[in-house]
Image (cartoon, rainbow, N blue to C red; front, side, top):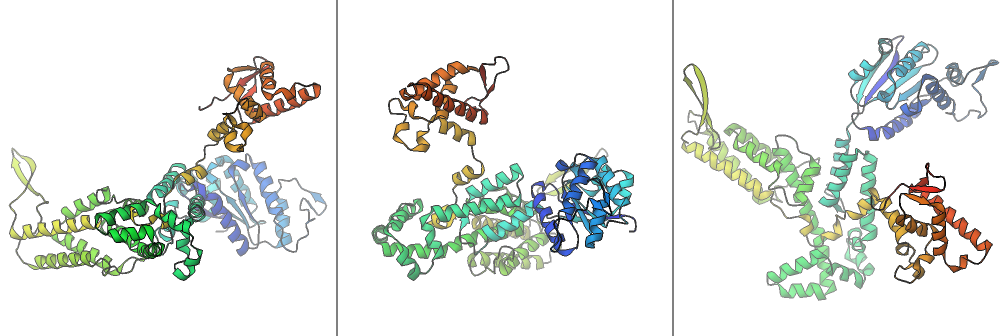
Length: 593
């Protein structure tokens, strides 16, 4: 519309952590598609209108094109010198470069002062005949709430469209389905580390990039720290054989899953096979290769369970939560299965036929989302049960009895009028033969589903440690570190980090060999809230050793170490100069608190 500033309202939702990357990608894309500068403004950099304009003009004029002279000065035009917040500078830049658009993005527009934002919009509108402004607003709530914050003049100056950004939860689910739950993924993340990833994602509202970085770190830990991961890269025995060493087979025999597997063979009476796996490396290699190739069946079963539950669920469950529960073997007693069972019990015959039909179609068609083809042959026993139940239900629905068929789980409502009051009571009526048959079909389907979702944990699979990564400690140490604990330990026990014999705390007079900061920290722990600097110096030089008592030069070197150690403690936030006494220090931190 003529006279109004074109604008785009980008509704990001609560996805604040990803706003930075989103607007960075938008800037790159718009810079390639339009001839003109693209500037992103943030609330923290724009305290008032003058500061906002300075930032805008500086960013616009610093965006050089390929053939532009670096010495071009748009602050001076036609002999006139403009102030560094005058939009005439941008006007000169637009004329010099023939810009089609000057795109200004307000990344966190709701964090801007409403008066400041309104003044900026009104100012851009007044310059629209000379500068082709185009505005983008990042909105976390809604366009309606954003409009209420603006003045009427500013709101009437805008004309634009709303763009909804895909939420973080759906993006994470897409990443999960492709990378973690995909049928061709080389390694799997276990339920322990995956639940830690999601817990951290939900608690700290992290960006998608942080989630992807955590996944990369988990894969790196698995392939770099697990020597048995070589089995995943080379499936062919001819390529794998020359690279294997005796230590690889020894490591396999130390795995918990190997020990459980051999114990199970012994319990089943297969003693020769168990002894062969313990003593024969070639037999063990064949068993490992067979198990790695067969791991896909266990993973496929997890994906199939997810497919079934998504098909049957009244409300679409979170697929990541389903994967975690299926991996731990806790689906049978989960809330999602109980809700499905309750909904099946309450259904009429027609609804029951709809459920069993959708379930049969899901088995036959598979799922493109989970990269599953038809799995009727893979789970032929379950498919045969479903087909049999559907056939019996169809024949039961075809019998014309003149009455509605219901199961014993349905309760009829009986209405009686007593003293002009309506009383509704529940009563279980006498079941007909068809009702009993329908009840048997309902029980059969419920039992089939409960038996099918009762699976073992992924960790129970033979040599699952090769293709399943579920170590939480490396992830926690890297992404939720405890720097204070580490610093305190390093200062208390430098021997643990320096690995030198002189700093060993078990040795006599070991404190003298500690770094100066560690000596001061030891004295710092023994002191009270107020520390006398002279007393601290006296104790410090006494712990440095006799070589610092040999003259003025030695004392100067000791004083240098003393001041450097104090500076380190002050930098770590442990001490500060006391306001009460000039020759004292105040303790700011206590160990373990």
